[in-house]
Image (cartoon, rainbow, N blue to C red; front, side, top):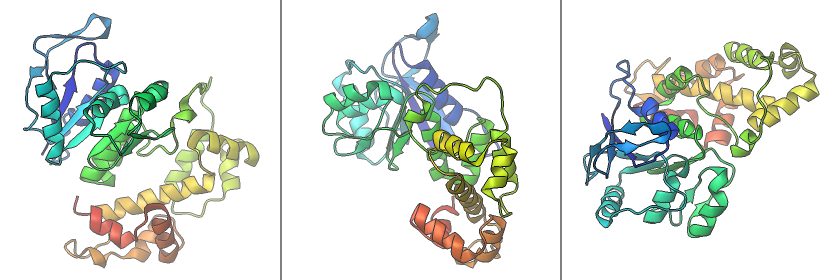
Length: 322
């Protein structure tokens, strides 16, 4: 069980709070172990939220009982925080525990100094202000999140879910992270950065593009010709390639490789085709390569090393136990 605290304040960010609760507080009895999540505050009494809503949260002065703390938003202009509460956060981080910020929550982590010398991000609207106030932080433009295993910062609003899914993946593996993502009706991993979502119009009606992608995922074991995929989307190849680049910031072929890697990672993590789960090196790599759509194990190993920096067996040794 991983104990999670969602630290809220008066006039906090309600959407980011909702993301944290949906990811970590929602009961998921089918996953065991899972997270035990509680909303807490350094402030006594009901907290005012947008729309005239008031919330009650347990007041705490210490965070020692938790394993991970999430800050779902913080005033970009800064906000007063008592020294004892700053000390509580710094003590929490100093013993090796995790801090996550959603959207403007990165401002609190930066004010504490824990982001100095580290990569961080926040909503694109606050980027210039953040960089001016915290020059010691290595600000990263145009990403959905950064996460090094101990500190994570998401970009604006919905990118909180992207960061949360990555945290779930590292804690419990690809298979469970993918199940959570599917229930949220989103991709387990969105490629690209914030710029793809700025002033991007919503389609007036559903087209064949997403249906073509669904077809590709269902038939990932087969050799998929990009021209046929474009035909299924009812687009010319040129338009199809442009659509892919603007939507995913990658080519159709790169996207297909990512889908194949996702299938292979899921099999490696779940123990499929492993005659002895206590001996991770015994996986039938050739069979996994075939079922995930790679032509052979050599090709799969190449793409594992190119994309992930490790071999399939090294990946399995790292994540299968989770």
